[in-house]
Length: 396
Image 1 (spheres, helix red, strand yellow):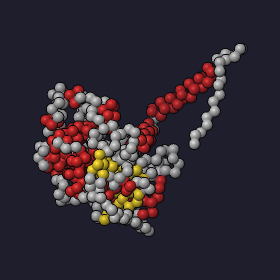
Image 2: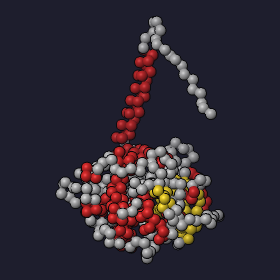
Image 3: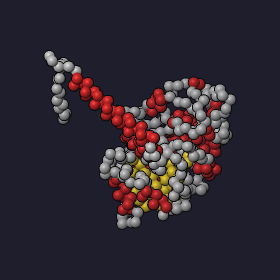
Image 4: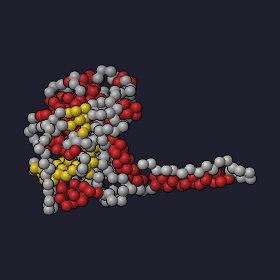
């Protein structure tokens, strides 16, 4: 059914009429636009500037995530399969009348969450999914894929395919030539300190399943070597991995992580490396457990520790989980920086995709979904923090 829209043909001014009415309308529009511009300018000069900008960033993340959250997004290509263990007898863990379940249930309803899972001391104690979430597999993990790439780099080092994270990028991608006599290392890509100056068309092309528009030889790394988050850094890491193993990304992840860990079927857009891994909440939990298990057979403890400790604190870097742009710590796509919860670290993707971990309490929370718009009056956007109930569970 279609809505009918009525139109009024105002025609041209008749005899005795002039354009004063039209001019007045445009004057009103100009006044309104000017007023908004003035208000915005005053806010930018006010003590609330940072709060306003953080709120705008969170709102932007909410809407961009909505455009990319499904496998059939018009902005991206269809993902490639990662074969895993197919679960045919899945039964969710049902928790009732526990001190954790009521606040988590309330938060689930208000936070646009589609998959929420809590593990304590190795046991799943809470698990809930929205209808059609396919246990999380229909949800784009967004930048949590970067953590997978960082893990894969560590595995390549463990296997001797890469000597060290301090290796030159040009050793693996010889097309890249740095002209300023400063070495560009794998570590620089992992930490977003490469000075890369990427183009927006490269991001669009790789999301669409294509290669970079800009030839590798023409990518500039002449920017500031301070932290600057750029997706193409992790695309280049993916190129290194696929070249040294001579396999597509989905098959590498399948062979090196998914099958050894016994994770469930998933999918990823091979051409990205910085985004777009679709996996169940329990599979993301398996990734989180790598950070708790001291003696797993998949990746060395040395590399896990390096991912957690080789960190920096950018001057300005917005993080959804904290809701702030200052004081956030970044490792190899590992986040921390909660002043009241220094033991907690997490993996984050746009839309507040989260794997949150507290080693002290041996607790992992996986959360997948979206972020409610600020204009959704039934959401949790007007509360002090988006993740307060999760932090309480992690601390216990």
